[in-house]
Length: 185
Length: 209
Image (cartoon, rainbow over all chains, first blue to last red; front, side):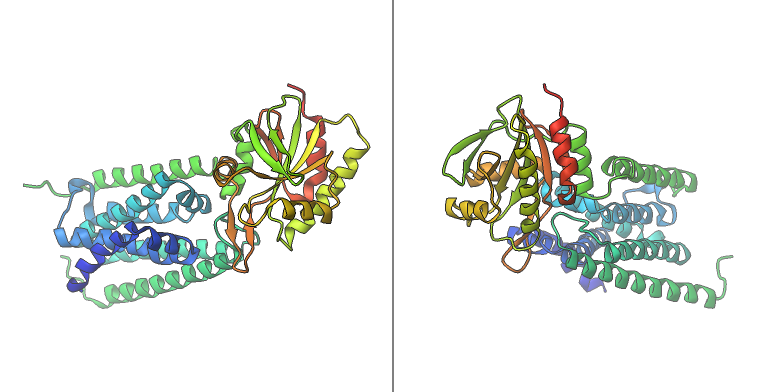
């Protein structure tokens, strides 16, 4: 896993290449299902590599990092936010920064996270992505002026798939917690 | 040495973060009412926040140069087309024809129908003229035209929030609609194609400046 951190930390730099950025952002599925996770992973890896833990007292059990990731993900599920990121360079910059910072905060929280809380966080993320995915899939009109209805359905299905994967992970974590003998005292 | 994490401080920071999310989302969606760009755009139009470049120069299907949005008394019903469009634009053409016939019985009307092409690469004067003939456009009531250049076209579309994306079959999908624009270039309201009667009556009833 450690060997993946450096390449993952550098991957977001690829989006500085305009042709690649336009290609990825030109597809709703690549934009939401590939770019968002890559930015998050980029920030996460950078923080893990540098060992930065900037939040100090504010991040007990990594709660602030996890909350930040949930907030950022929730905001960029709003169709208007996605459209504006394509129509306004400033909004797009905010999108890149927010996903990267959310990832970095998660990375900085890593050492303090408790598996119970991480499972709770993942479960919430799964629930939110599934809700957005179902709404995207079932919308009868175009949600984004920059994307077609077909892409909306593909993206909705992709979000549902990610939600299911996160849910499986959550359940495995929960199972591991309940199987382990209590060692906290 | 670092001070240890504090649960109360962490909880406060988390709540502040969640409130920030709520605030930003509420701002973006106009109080959780308008979740899409198009809904926001229509809301902005009804709040007089969308302004077209004024005056705006166009070249009509007759080859004539015209200035839009420089007559305080005029009212424009503007839609955006590309002449190769086989689907919804054909229907919209039909709706513009119906508006045209309704206006014919009202010779003193201030309402001007304008169809503007956003496909500058393909739509020259001949294509625009063919579009006008196909839809029986009467140049006295309904102007079929294009902006005078790519830069002007981009500026108009950007200011009005009209976005055309390739449909994968050589055409476009765009948030086309009927834009009610006053004589100074301010968008007053945006209507769906199917609401052309409401668009026409709103245009006719727009108070004079």
